[in-house]
Length: 225
Image 1 (cartoon, rainbow, N blue to C red):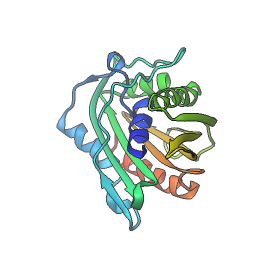
Image 2: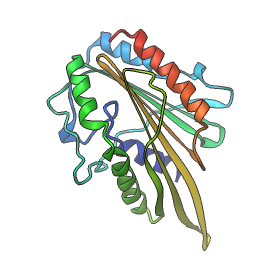
Image 3: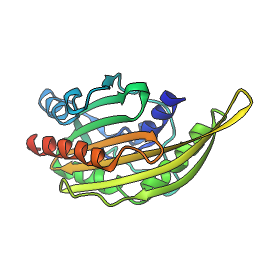
Image 4: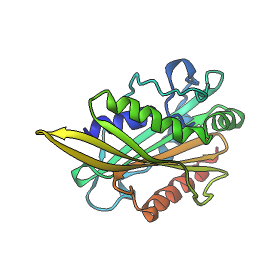
């Protein structure tokens, strides 16, 4: 259940730094220089305390991540670099995914951001999450979803939270498990990046979320995009 939920959560997101539905993907013209810059931005194992480990990145899925009134189209934009690094604590929770994209021009990066980083993103994420997880027989109740206050660590900064409860049947008994998803997106010049954290209860502690975001923002600035 944990890995399935994480795959769905990442597939559902439609931020500039994340994969979109195939027909709305930006054109990929990956070059070595921008690929190295993207790789330099994402979190490293050394950024985490003892007990965390790097895990294989979540594969792409065919999940429909669009919603009525929210289906950002980046098909006219050009992506020149991309990187992802996924981490989890002992026992599988919390999880942190760090993603970075580099666009051919600042204009492309700003266009991707403007089209995608909207208030409707959080509610769309909640809708898609509920729809996809319930295909596996569980029940999802969304408690809250929306933008949250967050320090402006980069010229383009936005953060979202989705709180939800998954109800599953185990050995004839009903189990309710609360989760919180946090998404922090940062943009600077030609680069966009995102942190996606997934944890029980109220989610990753705010201090840790800010610390990871500060490291990412510093590397984004250092990439000089």
